[in-house]
Structure formats: C-alpha cells, structure tokens
Length: 165
Image 1 (cartoon, one colour):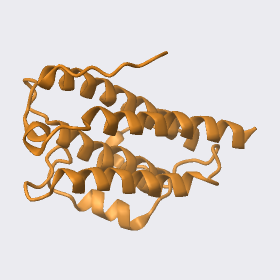
Image 2 (cartoon, one colour; image 1 turned 30 degrees about the vertical axis):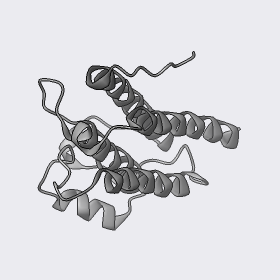
Image 3 (cartoon, rainbow, N blue to C red; image 1 turned 180 degrees about the vertical axis):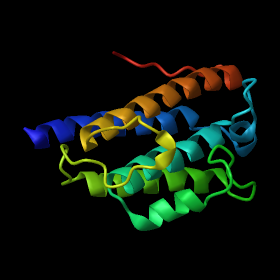
Image 4 (cartoon, helix red, strand yellow; image 1 turned 90 degrees about the vertical axis):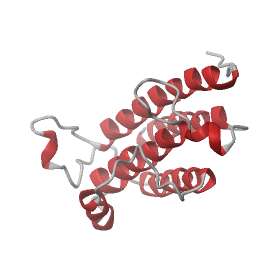
C-alpha cells in the first residue's frame, strides 16, 4: 500500500513541477525577471523559491535531515525569492530540476510514516508529523505557485494553459 500511495503522491508532485516549468516555456529572460504583481516577485524568483524554500528545505533538510542542506539554509542571508542577477534563467530552472531529482531520490524508498529528521525552531509549535504530511505540504505549495504563474503568464503575454480536470 505504501508503494502505491508514494507513487500516487510523487505523480501528483511531478505533475505540478512540470506545470511550473511548462507555463514559463517561451518567456525570455526579461519577461522572467519582470515583476508583474504589486508584491514585486518575478517568475524566475518564484521558481528559485520553489527550488530552495520548498524542494531543498522540506525534503533535503526537514525530511531527510541532510546536514549540508540544513547548514546552507541556516547560513543563507538573502531571500530565495531573489536569485542572484548573474544567475541565468536556465541555471534557475536547472536548480529547480536538480532539487526535484534529489528529493525524488530520497523519497523513492523513504518511510511515509517517518517523522521529520530536523525541525527548525522558527516554526514554534506548528509541526508536520511525518513524511506523508511533508509531501502533501510541498504539493500544496507547488500547486498554489503554479496557479500564481498561470495568472502572471496571462498578464505578461495572454498565454493561458489549458488544464483538464
């Protein structure tokens, strides 16, 4: 049962990851870096955020307890929403794909009932109890941001992504 559940969860997550990258296909560097909403985030910044604050943070740091990822997260001073200006769009997309691959490698045989191996103090009393909840949290985050990207893409050039339910 766990393998079927894991396969279903990963299929949904991978579908949302593909949606994020797919809705941005065809946009040039200028469009990817242009803020469209009053909050000022950019499409490229959102993908960078998903790579670092969702994939890396939740899977490599929280769920897997990977020390290098934890140290990078705790030592970072900048915002994941702001990729370095010298980082190209393809580098940001490659980072997102790579973090997804690393997450998938961990998730391939991880116990869905396992408690997170690391939990940051800054969450206070809020907590996810097991890997299943972590995966569902990341699916929700990724799907939410995919919807944001759909709306912003339509504002940029009118492109709409047809999604069948």
